[in-house]
Length: 307
Image 1 (cartoon, one colour):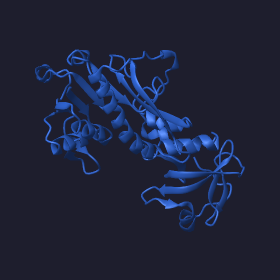
Image 2 (tube, helix red, strand yellow):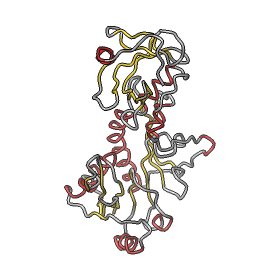
Image 3 (tube, rainbow, N blue to C red):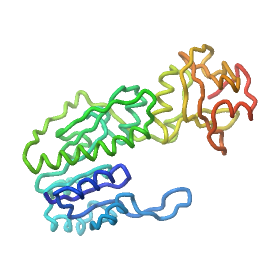
Image 4 (cartoon, rainbow, N blue to C red):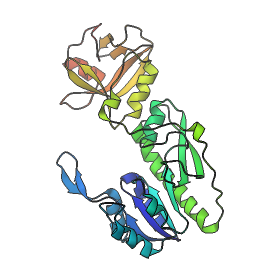
């Protein structure tokens, strides 16, 4: 099949590489324009562009997907299928270009967790499993007919970053199977049940703020689900304390207050139900450290309040 691949971040790279090694032909790779990134604000290329160039594939970087000259280029390529992984929402005019339509990879078991941050929200909500879905694109976001789904277990201590790394490789295999299914006509699209849909909106920095009145288990899921981005945090002594890793304890106390502050037993803070030992934390302007090291360099009293 003649494919146009669309994607931007590293999550899409394994899929691009696997399809490039298949019997299908990638006639073009579409990604976002080079942009300023990182603390230094240096102009750099998307990860997908770098991967495509290393594979010798032609790359298009339109400023707008609605640009008529860009759309004309794609029509001239006569693609059978658009393969979309971690990219922008396609306008209706583009969806009409490929012969067999467009497919997308979504890291959840649709219709659950439709939106920009399905991996993070599955962990924040305490799910024990999530999955991967390939589906046909339609104008409504993440609502097209399902092609193939695969369930993936979430480890009890797994962070969003760790799950992301697993799913980008498992997702590549699922997309490859889906493209093969289009080629041999073996796929049967299944309509999504909108009644079972749940949102997974984009996370912002404030999404990681810890509310100590919540249950300890829910706070732990927030810490896992926002690691590495945007990161969980709590307020302490007029500053911000980033919280990278926590552990449930049996301690009790008033929510948000310190119940243990011993370098040998770590820093323990009570929640609305249960308590948490802060295993890996990062004071403002400093490197991450374990709770014991933090207590050796900072005075923290029993009963002191965080948040």
